[in-house]
Length: 188
Image (tube, rainbow, N blue to C red; front, side):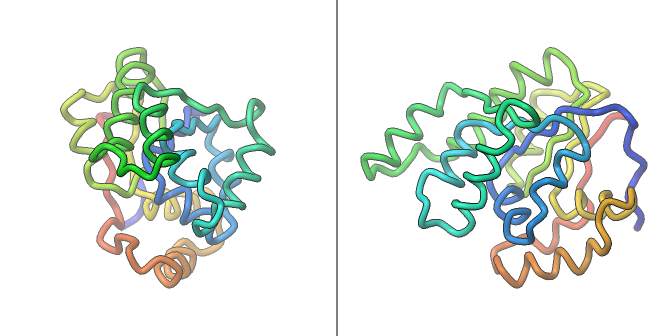
């Protein structure tokens, strides 16, 4: 199955959960996101991926954020961000589904209701279900990170999407191999 064509518009690229960011860092492909547009990273995703520098790829993600913050990357504050940070710093378990709820609320306030274009990359299956409930404008595309890699190959930005995904799966055995071609859109 080949990837669907993507609009020539430069969308806001929204990292809807931590796994795509971690996986792209693992294979040295974080900058691939900038080929599509300005990247928005929710505070909860930043905290989950880089607050604890002992986590895998946290130093790489932190360095990437600092190098690109403002010019090509924005941090989005969410209502749950401060609660999430306090929970992590005090050793308390963060509220259940806080990352997903925070990003979906932010998307609803900043993208879904105000309009895109936006490209939302996710791996957590809760994200598309939550977004479906919000309703998607025509200029928002939601895709898995594996589909994002395939689209990048089709656009000549990545040599071999399947080899890249295989490397990701070897590094993170929890990656979702079933999430090959999930794409939600009303139109492109």
